Length: 518
Picture 1 (cartoon, rainbow, N blue to C red):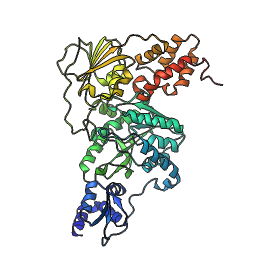
Picture 2: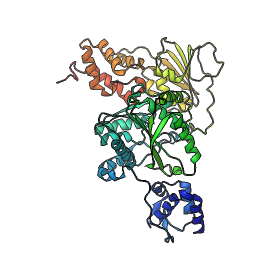
Picture 3: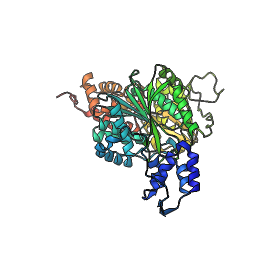
């Protein structure tokens, strides 16, 4: 007991957390370390320090006190939960979200994925509903490994959502479940270091994000959330962020990055979010409600402009990792444009373009040969970088061997380019024009990757189907691909790009009155 008393004394006024751990142990039930951390929102290191000083009975990975500790009291209630009293009425939704989370793609270590619990995502939805008027409102989920979009739109039918994420698996899963459940959720691919998708900019009334817990990650994701707000007077950003009670300096760095964005913190709910992991921070995170000011958008633009590739806490894209060396030149012939960060002094006089600019807008000219440098961590952007150009020859230099790329990474560009890999180079040679109507329509859509898919598709249909008017062609596209109405090729998730050839084929055989009223 002396050692425990010393730990409690060292905790000072923050001693409620370790006392909550001891009181939970005093209940006599079996615990796992993960459950005890999450239940008490106390960091793993603090919990382990307490466990070393008590006599435990163990069974596999479970444990409990062998005998009661003298002087333990029952657990005191923590800070009031703003929506906890509403949970009981939504048990079916919690059960549904628990199933959806369990079946979702496993989190990726390098992307800092840790799933929130089902009752957390439902409580997020309840807080949105309790705090804001959601009839006709739009919610932007800046990353959504937690499936908050599904919980929020299921709880409030008047709300629609857009999810932007770099993980193709998550986008495909959310779209599949939203279609199955009839929920108004759009999915968009985005690596936020390269920008917010055009169809998500100035679109939302509310944004929510649970970003990588680094100052760089929080600053970038919140800046993109601000760019996504259409309501610049009343819009809000909800941020999940947590740090161990042992690392206040890290939390200060994150809050400083928020201050640089000129945001007002209207509320901070301690330990609102609970996770199936993240034990270093107590498997918990606070929930911030942030209100932009007129100075937020210039600051957000500046923050996005300075974004680097290292924003995560783990893996090769971690902030602590050594910066990847600049790619060595791998240029066959003289390129007319260098895209990305090439070594200084390479091919002086050749125009250079940033990756962000290359994806954001088409070039007025049509260069024959392009060389693209892709740094470590941005490999998933490769097919979009290829589709963003009409060049006949493109050579891409990667930071890692090109043969290590999963086949599905390059496949979206395969209808346009013949692709070969060697060393750290991907060589793309433009394929000849297709001979079939289906091929011509598909190719025209992919060749105009910066344009709206539905508009390009309609014009391509009219070029091969004399039986259609513009109105009818528009109705056919809307009927076979309702997800194509306001999206560009460059922001389509991979699962939609895979669906595109089949949808094009259906549009060619659809009757002229398909999709017409009545």
